Structures are given as structure tokens and as C-alpha cells.
Amino acid sequence: MTSGTTESGREITGASIVLDGVEKHFRGQSEPAVAELDLEIAAGEVVAFVGPSGCGKTTTLKMINRLIEPTSGRILIDGRDVTGVNPDKLRQSIGYVIQSGGLFPHWTVERNVGAIPRILGWDKARIAERTEYLLELVGLDPAEYAHRLPKDMSGGQQQRVGVARALAADPPVLLMDEPFGAVDPITRVRLQDSLIEIHKELGKTIVVVTHDFEEATKLGDRVLILSKGGHIEQFATPAEILATPANEFVSEFIGSGATLAQLSLTRVKDTEYDPVTTARVGESSAAVVARARAQGHRWVVVVDSTGVPIAWPSLDEIGATDEVAGFVDNRLPVVAPSSTLHDALDQMLAASQGGALVAVSGGPLLGWVRIGTIIEVIRGQLGDAHADEASYVEFAEAEAENGGAS
Image (cartoon, rainbow, N blue to C red; front, side, top):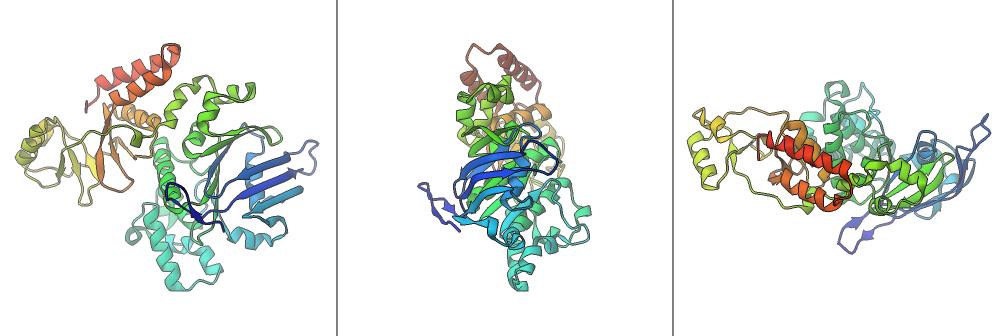
């Protein structure tokens, strides 16, 4: 396994992946599903595979861990040719996440997470410690979720368990096949943000198959665009692809809205946050209102005992009762620092708010970002030459004027 640190000080625990002349011919088909694919993925890199149906992206992913055997060619992980390794041993050393989690339905969460470590002969104490760490890493409280069955959890929670299970044996490589395709858009954004934070902490090599180009640009350090037969049309950073598509195929694939897709390249953490006034449930409403007015704020953010935001009421709403109520607003627009500005704008419009709160998943509130800040970024990226996308900006502004926080 390759390990080390980058120039920024981030630890790398992933391994390099090399596909050398890899081909796959399925019986009964005249054309190869993947024809002579050459690909190099650096240790600790996130690469997203995208392309139209039948382009070989899932086939290529499955050949890396030999769920599908290559017809010819070599696959090297950390310099070792894995085409001659026992496939079961190989898969035990590679994390694999599929759509909907793929959990064993009659096993508890902790048993699901500990599946591979048990096969590898880890002792109970080590498995329990690893399970607790990973559940916390994916944003699930071990005390609350360890003994639950998958049927008692939401789709997003099940997918988080699937990621924890894939990481259980500390593999250098994590393969993800359409991991967030079966959840709703808001949950998908949160899972994407969680994956970004996990990668930041662990430094694994991650390969993601997705049909969504926007998701690919958000997650991938580099994006691999494939056409029929596993032909590489472009393999570059999201910024390079959006700025200079390699050919007409790539231009058509990323679509006419590519300029607006630049919003997926800018993170919330790269913008300015504004401070907020917070309040705890049960606090004196009069004291909270006085504190907010002293800061020039017209609303407050109610947080729970751990500092996680749960509601965003106006001062009039707060002042209507003697104490701050514990109402939980499920439509509260909350984004992570790693969220894209596109994510943030979507959240604002969905909640009819003129801003979004910024908080690390399951963590404390960092501030809020205004829709006006995002619109200025959009204007700077679009210029005057893109009337269609600019009309979207005008729509966003109009919606924001009707929102609550502004």
C-alpha cells in the first residue's frame, strides 16, 4: 500500500491503479465492451468514470476487483499485477460500494460493518473499535445505530453504512458503483459532502462510477469520459474539461449548460460566511431577541445540545413565546463547506430562503452564505455572453427576494 503525505500535509493511504491494455469481450457480442484501455490513477486520487450507457464504465470498475474478469491486459494495484491473485483475497483488500448499500438485511449495522474484518480473523475488540470509529466517520452515532437493522434506517443512512462496511478492513482502494443514485437529491448532496470529508481524512484511492456529470465534477480530482467500447474521450480535471472539451463528443456529453456547471467547481468554503446569532432550546426569548438585535440580525438559528442547527426563525417568531421552542425544520437549508455553490443555490431555492447555513455534517454551525454572494460568482463566471444561463441567475434572485432569510 502506498502511503505518505502531500505538499499540503494530507496523509495518503491509497494505492495507485494502472490498467495496461485491458480488454473485455463478452461471449456472443461482436464488439468488445472495453477495448485496450490504458489508464493510470495516482495513489490517493478520486477519479470519476462517466459516459453514456454501454460505454464500459461499470465493466471497467468491476474488472479492477475482478468481479468481471478481463479478457486480456494487466491490472496493477500499487505495482502488483492482480490478474494472477486469488480473486476472493483481492476483493477482501478492496472496498466496494454499490447502489442502495447492498447490506445484509437480517444483520445489524455493526455486524454488516464487521463482515470483512471477521473473515480476515480480527478479534472482537478490534472489530468493535473499528466499527465505532467508522460509524462516527460517516456521521452515524454508534450508540443509536450499531444495533439497528437496515429496514429501520433511511436510504441515506443505509448508504452511509455501506461506505463504513467498505472501509472496515482499511483498504487502500475504494470502488463505488453509482453509490448515490437511489436517494433523493438533498440526501445525495449530503452523502457527496460526507464522501469528500472522508477522503480528506483517509486519503484513499477512490474510483466512482456515475451517470451524473455534475456529480463527477464535484467528487473527482479527475474525470474520465468514456464512449462506446471503453474508449477514452477525455481524462482531465473538471476545470480542464469544462474550459477545453477535447472534442465534439465531450462537448455534447457535458451539454450546453457547461458554463453554469462552473458552479460545481467552486466550494462554499471558498466564499465568505456571514455570522449568525444562535439560540438554545429553552432560552429566554427576550434575551435571544435582544442579542440578535444588538448584532443587527433579523432572525436567529436555533441549535440543539450539540450545536447542530434545527430551525431558522425570525425575531417575531422567537418573540411570540417566552422560551425558544424546540421546533425542528426539516427543510432547513444547510450546506457543508465542501458543498458546491450549485448545491447551495439548489438548497436555497428549494427552501425559498435567501441564504443557507454552513455546517460540517453533524457538526457545529460555521455561519451562513448569502444568495447574493453566489449570484456575484455566477455573474463573474458567465459574463454577458450567456443569456440562457444568466436568465437562471435572474430567476434565482427573484426567488430569493421572496425567501425568509435575506
